[in-house]
Length: 89
Image (cartoon, rainbow, N blue to C red; front, side):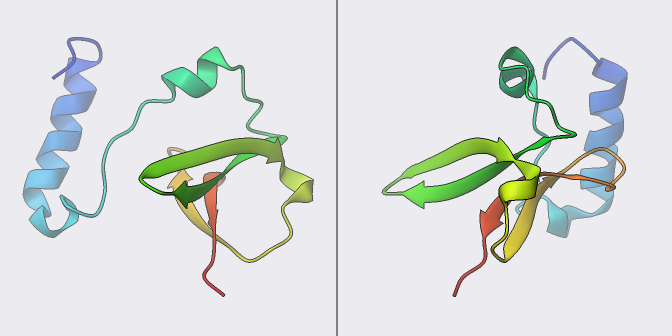
């Protein structure tokens, strides 16, 4: 477990212990790489796809995403999607 934000991580761990069915469905993720890339979440969104055994995420202008999408990652209060995947046809 990371030493940084230990109290926060312990609180999240308690939620997963309270709802064990969610343990294989959700994971806590860091936005470190996106922050290093200086992603502008107001104007950009990640769009992911699977190629072989790789998950490829490209960041595009939010207004350019017009196909049916399913949200993979939400911001902390579920008001904005951070990462999409195209819905199956």
